[in-house]
Length: 112
Image (tube, rainbow, N blue to C red; front, side):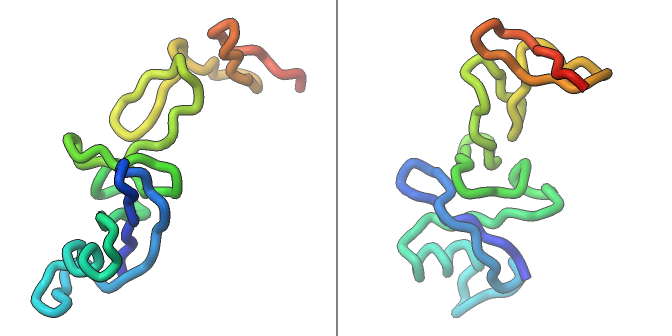
């Protein structure tokens, strides 16, 4: 079994379903083409182990056709995308518990 992301007209994932293995043909068509034609949505395969298309697609993720990857939603306006994921402008400290403060663009340490 394989997993498939349903995309809307803006390449936003609106559903993720399980389907036949991607190596199988359905009515002579590869699975993405068959499911796209059957549903009227653009369908792209995704994988739990992130071996294809960057990361496993979730509802609200965006499919980037230029890079052929799924991109998670941007958590804060200041964060910078690297591949499928977003990184803060300053690295997360390694010790303690921290919360990102977007207003001040810095990590705020939480009390233990």
